[in-house]
Length: 182
Image 1 (cartoon, rainbow, N blue to C red):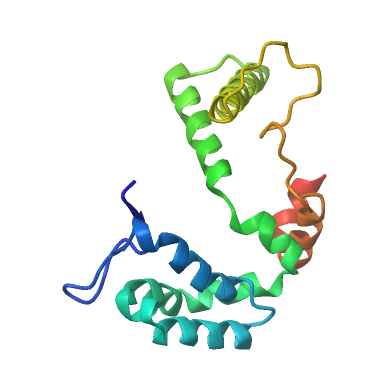
Image 2 (image 1 turned 180 degrees about the vertical axis):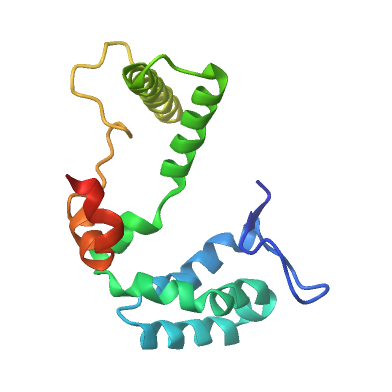
């Protein structure tokens, strides 16, 4: 993409709705202290610093996105920093869910739950293999041998502190998480 979407809609006419590709890394670096702040007060100070910066003035919709979503953003800061890394990066999860929905939609109906599980498992294996092949291609190598190790959803990647995530989420949202942990 030539531009990275920060905010879908703008409330100020003529205000930039996107961050130019050349500024994307600088904006990401500038807003990182907001979502990595240890508490809400520090995050608010970092947000104000970004808003008042040259980049904040150039892309006010990016600064306003935090302001509009502040009440929804604050609970995120209650989690320990290790857990935040697990829960704020959802692109691969959303991509996987999209691909699984597509597989289910194309199939239509199923004779039983086992058939659904089998189809989803095979789809996950296929998706994982395609992603792994793409990563190898990007690195300029090819897989000449069949896989020997047990597969992971993202081959070669380990989600740090993932095992701590369900426990922390169960503490924060017991009614929503605990029924699914057993």
